Structure formats: structure tokens, C-alpha cells
Amino acid sequence: MTGTYPPSRLNLQAATGFLLTVEKHGADLQLSLQLQAANARVIAGLTDWTTDGEVALRRSVSPDAAEREILSLASFLRAQIPELAATEAGTED
Image (tube, rainbow, N blue to C red; front, side, top):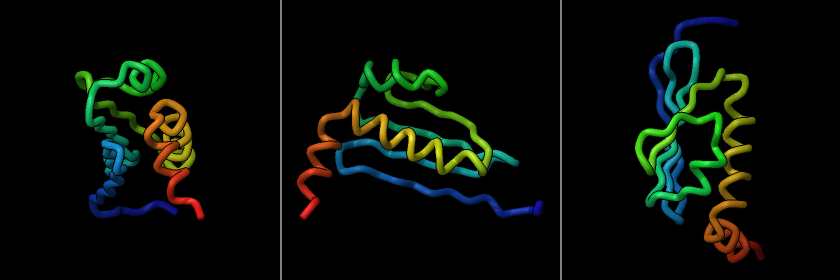
């Protein structure tokens, strides 16, 4: 089903210092990742993303691929940023 949808934005922020913004851009969704500090491991590992300086990355995806890409990003960030794994481990009961 196709149609016209109003502009929309979703912000997901982690306590460990990054912000993921998902914004509708035409038929695609623009994923923007803002890191609190430069992280060479994260930037080097996100080869499908375009860098905007040392702390910002972006990528366009289709709406059908957005969920898969966001979950893949979350998994990658947990592996690369130790604070994420520690935060999650501390919240499980």
C-alpha cells in the first residue's frame, strides 16, 4: 500500500551517550547516529554508514529494512561499547 505520510521523527537515546534518530525522507528512512565521543571502533565497523565528522554517522534505508538495520546496529553497539553490555547486565533481574 502506498500513500503520503507526514514527516515524522523518532529519537532513541541510550544512557551511555549516543542518540539514534530515525526520520522519514521521501520514500526512505534516514538513520542518524550521534555518538557522545569519537569512537574509532564504531566508525570503522559501520562501513555501510556515511560519517559526518568524528561523532556522527548516517544511513538511508527502506521502511521494510529499518527494523532489521536498527536491531543490527543495536547488536553491533553492544559488542563495541562495553558500557552498553554492563548497563544491560545491571538491569536484568
